[in-house]
Image (cartoon, rainbow, N blue to C red; front, side, top):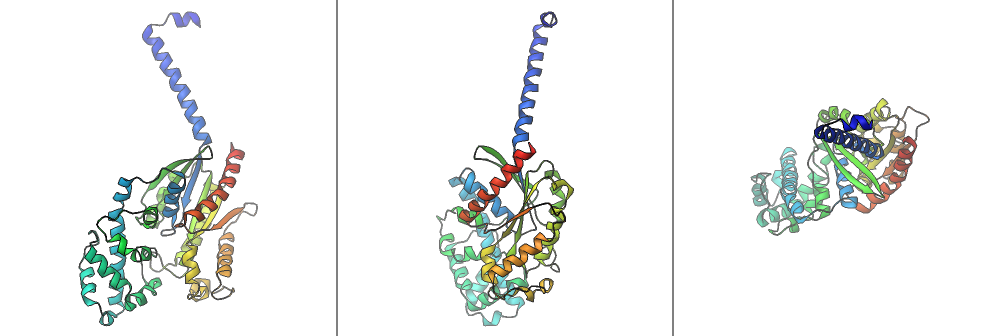
Length: 352
């Protein structure tokens, strides 16, 4: 071997050293990849997946810089304007426009492009409209049309958002909504372990892209919005959102790609569910006529939907872990994820 080495030219020796270094780096990279914990966030559209994803950055990642916070202003302004204009459109759809007293503000906001920056004047008009009893009546009928529930957070904070020196805080960013398209990835060092999380689009036309995330996934976190039992899909106004979530969970839970992955269910938007259940009975929604719990009972409603999801698991020996979550509550998400982390780490050790 030594003789062969000595017969090589300097250029050949250098080439051999580079080759060995490359092989060593590839081997090290393979070991790192093997130890990496891959988490896949799945769920139907509007379930709150992306908010969970952003919470992970808040809790475990690098905090938002001032520049990043400023970059969120156009998105937040657009969310506000889209939301209020949807409400005003529905005022007209329900033939309630003649009951509107603040007609000047109504016309002003209707004429604003949803991509404009919110001025103090527009902000004042939005505040007047949001507190108007006709607009509130339309808001309370929101299961009859498409609007993002979380936009009320911005309406209630419009006095801050309308100011020229407005700088979004972490909660403002968490509530912002940009529909996920494709696959977004973030990595975090948690308790000395490298976690890699994938967020993918939840609408039907985005799901075909999920296949690229399937290989070597340590755990699947399936997010379902428990508050949406009386709402319809954005992309299909004939399909109940909870029915869609249940069918998708059945497909994912029993998918051959995930048989070796931990399956964790997040029943999300529990804050909205707690409020909705007081006035919207579950059995009043056609797909859930079999609900036998108490009307208005948060606990009975939660258990009913837990049972619905658990019944979709066709493998009797497979455990599905479930948690009730509020994606916009950092403390809640951290407590839940700390619990999930132990499950995920045990699974990773077993498979390594």
